Each structure stands twice: as structure tokens, then as C-alpha cells.
Image 1 (cartoon, one colour):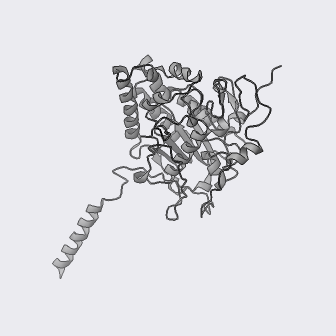
Image 2: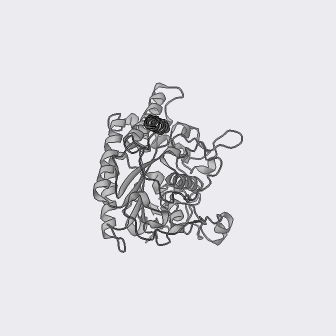
Image 3: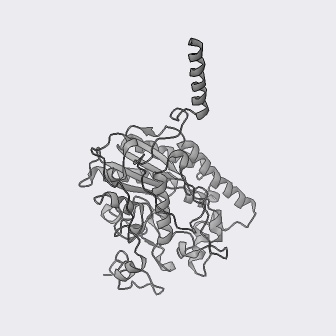
Length: 399
């Protein structure tokens, strides 16, 4: 019987599994990250009941939904033979391999605040095979999924939460990260109705409403989708780069300045605009639940080398997905957005310079969840000034 590749092993050009763990001692010594420590890493004195008062250490459960960017296709491989492998253990939003010093992921950052965090992905999996939660952790993303499939992922997530040993479904605070929609853009030219902005928003609404109705004590990060046009520039002298032309043909095959490409770029921007509009306001906000749009990828471009060419070290052999190096930057950007207020969330133009992690502030040590809306926004400054002048006017009239 052929043995299945073990998690963390690398694929060689010959397709053999090297008999050494790429996360072994030598590898770790070469890429050990400095410690990350914040002044306050303690949980709240009592379990918070409000979604606005959740500290990082209060989070007990982490989960992720999405597609191959979240399953981390090929992330720790070096050749085309690694593309069927999902390196979930290093995935930006939920990878749980080792510690923060080994691999920077959102889950490994949260583990610094709560070492007993439930859900981080523990191992590598193989695409298109039936998997258990013991293999994936709470990474419910599926390679190749479109937005229309997200509700199925959520159903799987809810069922897993309710039956997982040690998880208190009603009491434990959960962080769920969603990044989906790139495959809709990749498939847009094949069915412009099925993969339209209207359907993208319809399925996102359906998914978010399901979570709000079914899952208590949950903070949902919806990560804004990338502007994808620049991925056409990612090139490597590998057979894998030819794969990009097949699985995202709507993006890669049109000629420069063609009508087809211009339409696709506009659809990409329309997806972003519609998602931003959907999540503006308090529709998906209540006492124990919040959905927050994390916009840090909104205008990001591929990292470049000094000569202006795209830095291929951020991309896998297929010239489309991210390597561990890319996943780590995505993780840091997301963490930072979570601790930045609605009107102060950073947009990262490029990952050429490493993202510097921030700590929760002393003044507001909680994950920012308050939505920006007309009803919840603080009165504008000019309104406050006007009221002050009115008070003075009234006072003088009584003297």
C-alpha cells in the first residue's frame, strides 16, 4: 500500500518526498521570527457578553472559510508537483504549525494570547479528498470553491462547532475569517450571470445571515478581495505558470487593453464596491455578533524587486497562489486591521516591505467591531461646535 505524504514534507522535482521535515530544526533556525509581545496579553476578568469588548485573549475558537488561498495550495512547495497539496498548517488566517516564531499566521498570533485556542489547522492535506476536522482544524475552505459554495462551508462549520470536544458553542468567543470571490472573477467570462456581482452579493448575504442567525458570540472578518489584474505579471520559467492560464483563464488569456480584460477589471472593482456597500452599517451587527470588512488588500499590488519586476518569492510554482512568505504578510495585515478602528484601517499598497505588527492599544484593547453607519457614528465635529456656540448664546440671553 502506498503511504500518504506526511504533513510538512516537501515535493522534489522528481516527485519524491524528502525524508526530512522542512520544519525541522535546521529550517527553523534559518527562519526563526523574533518574539512578539504586547504590554497587555491577558483575558478580560470575566467572559465578555458584548461583541465590542472582546480582547484577543478572550477568543477561544478560530475558523476560516474560502478557497485555495485559504487552503494554502502549494504554499510550502517548490515545484508544480506540490500544487495538489494544501499546506493548511501555514495558511495565513488559520495555520497552526508550531508557534509564531516558526510561522506567522493569524492563529499563531492569537495563540500567543491564548495557547489553548481551538481550531488552527495542524497539517497538510491533499486536494479533492475527503477530510476530517482532525486533519483540517476549523479551516473549512475548499480549493476551487466559488462564493455560491460558502453556505455549504458554513453548514459544515456549524455542525463541527456543535460537536467538537471542549468547545462551548454558546459561550466561547469565535473569530471566523472569510476570503472568497477570486474564483468568481476567474470564472466570470465562462458564465457572466452565475458569476455576476449580483450573485456574488446574493451568496455573501446568504452566508452572513446564516452565521448571524446560527452562531453566537462570533466576530467575522470579511477580507476585501484583491485587485487581480497585476497577477498577469507574475511569471516564472516553470511549467506551473502555464497552469495559471488554465485555472484563471478569464484573467490571463485576454490580450492587454482588450475589451474582455477591461470588463473583467471593472467586474473586480464592482465586486469590491458592492461588498463594501453591503457591509457598511449595522445590518450584520448585534450584541454578540459582528461582521467587519477588513480592507487591507483593497488596493494592494504584487511585491516588486528593485528592478521593478514582480518578486517571485511570494508566489508558488503556479504563479498565482502565495508561498509561506506571502501568507505571513497576509496574516500580519489582517491582525493589524482587526485592531484598527473603522476609519483608521490600513490599506497596504505593496508587501515589498514587511508589515509590522501592532499591539492592541491601551485605550482600546478590544477587537474593533463597531460598524460605521449614520446611526452609530459619533456626531460630527462641526455639530459639536455648533452646540457649544448655541449654549453660549442661550447663557448670555439669560444674563
